[in-house]
Amino acid sequence: MMLNGEKKIARPLRWAMVGGGRLSQVGYKHRTGALRDNTAFTLVAGAFDIDAERGKEFGVNIGVDENRCYPDYKTMFAEEVKREDGIEVVSIATPNGTHYEICKAALEAGLHVICEKPLFFTFEEGEEIKALAERKGKIVGVTYGFSGNQMLLQMRAMIEQGKIGDIRVVELQYTHGFNANDAADKISDAQKWRVDPKVAGPSFVLGDLSTHTYYMSQLIMPHMKIKKLLCDRQSFIGSRAPLEDNAFVLMHYENGAVGRLWTSSINAGCMDGHRIRIVGSKGSLEWWDNKGGELRYEVQGEPTQTLIRAMPYLDDSCNADERLGALHVEGLSDSWANIYLKFAIAIDAKNRNDEETLKNLVYPGIDAGLDGIRWIENCVRSADNGSAWEEFEHDKALV
Image 1 (spheres, rainbow, N blue to C red):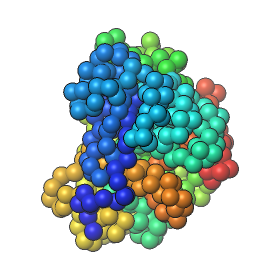
Image 2: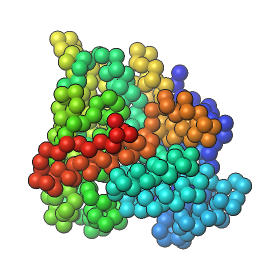
Image 3: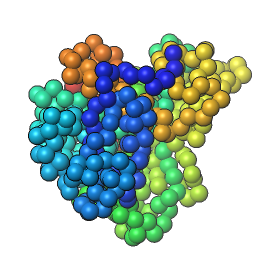
């Protein structure tokens, strides 16, 4: 049964944002996702901008009470806790270097958290936040916005059903050409911080782009774990060093499969280079973001099949996230809506101590965020060691 906007939880959650204001590249995506089903979240407050007046003006313009448009997140948390109708969950849509302190403050204020990726700079910070969230009984979700595309769940189901046999090769790519020169580095505040190690952390495109694709591959193949990897990264725009604007990653998986990933923001002329191909012993599956409602299914010796979104021959897990019906194009906004709806279901289940729902819900939670941090750390360590093969360090809790 497709989604039709009927409520999945008893009432909408009172929701706020930190960041995501007028100049944000991601704020509208968060609001589109959260408010797509008005039965899941209601935006009631925000600290939308580092410029308090601009943030207040923006908040009022999108319908938030001016008295609940705060100058900063600390003020918002302190004031909202005093209200009977105070916020219950907050989304963090700010530069990477602020995620840890805001997330920690939100959890300590008794709030559930939805945070941009990559979560934090270090795995140790992630472990601390995970432990705090567990003590507080709160959910931490990560906005891997592409991962709500339901055809990824179709890939997951077909692999589990043995449709392509044993996995042998994993090919991942997320590239574009919008940073092929340094113009944006100089004029765009949203780009400036992404190439500043103090704010962005130890990577640029590995963290900004490939963590999406890496998580999506783990969503599709939850039992596939990397044994070792080799990362070679470059700063073709020299001023971005030591952060990379291009990187290649080779991977060996524990089951003997091999993989490669290319991530880049200097793929000049490329408008959408986001793709995933999984090659098995019987056949292959391939998904491209620019045709997100289609899935290529190729069986050796048989004609290529193109599976189309919303059709009854797809797996129930795929069609459960369907919104518009066949022939009507869905895209990134619906993908965000799917993960935000699952965040709402997870938060509601956590509030009710419904561990069965949480166990069976497929969504990017704290463990996915920690795995993304570990992915970046392993890639950076390999690159900084002369692009050497490195044993992939898994946290035991994530294996």
